[in-house]
Amino acid sequence: MSRAMSDPAIRYDGLLSGGAMVAGVIGHPIRHSLSPRLHGAWIRALGIDAAYVPLQTRPDTFEMTVNALTGGTFRGVNVTLPFKERALALADDATDRAAASGAANVILYREDGTLLADNTDGEGLLYALRRQAPGWQPDRGPVTVIGAGGAARGAVAALAAAGAADIRILNRTRARADTLSALLPCKAFGWDDAATAFDGTATVINATSGQLTGDTPLPLPPASDGGIVVMDMVYKPLETPFLAACRALGHQTVDGLDMLIGQAIPSFVAFYGVAPPDLPVREILLAAMVPAPGDL
Ligand code: ATR
Image 1 (cartoon, rainbow, N blue to C red):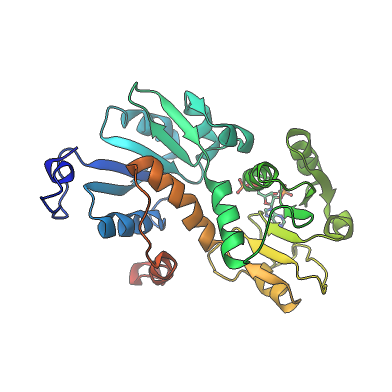
Image 2 (image 1 turned 120 degrees about the horizontal axis):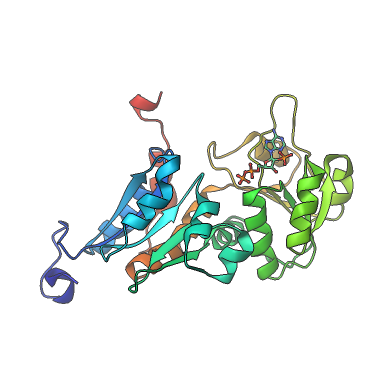
């Protein structure tokens, strides 16, 4: 720990010391990641001797890059697309929730040089639902997850662990839904059986990478008086075509931006050993999502 950190009489001046706590986010590409702004805003507000950096790696150098950061300076890294499954495979140990999700969005560098994989995406999912749909509970009724890839698997694992008793997987390719239902407690449905998958459902989560455009529209939960909560894990755009269609049907909608925040909170605690401060981070991220001139 640096002198500024260990002596409260010395106010940290915002410059890193040689003993700074460093973490980051690794992915390909990483340029558009919002995580450095999010963690950076918390670090700046706390005034701690710490940094959070974007780490771009080529697909073939992911493992080499992660392994190269052991040794003390790096506390850990967040892992984003397309490396979450490889992060779990690379780590020496994994938390139960990472193992159940089949993927890791956090790697922690332990003092003995080993890597621990964790997954806080599920926490982020529950955080977003609770924040934008006040009073929402995992056991309020059936949950229908659209999709059967890695994102859907993580959602099912988190919902099951949080107490959801009736989880339904609805996927374009029925066989992938069957594969998921063999791994985790959920029932599988194909597109042709969407009505059954939505029957009496209380919560719908879009975990596909597809959208309601072109010739492959996602099935929509039917209009109901019951107040179905519909979430999209995607946050660019904030209101996806799927969410817009669900809102037009009268459903309560939850966007994916709070999921990003909700997974970052426990990541920050794991990296820096302190809770993030209370900041309007959603607004900070929305401001950062306005395209920069170079992005147009
Ligand atoms: P991820 O790890 O992000 O979940 P993935 O493993 O490639 O990515 O899974 C993508 C999911 O989105 C799958 O459920 C896929 O459906 P299929 O299994 O039928 O391929 C779904 N998906 C992608 N594009 C889609 C589209 N245009 N319409 C419907 N589903 C789509």
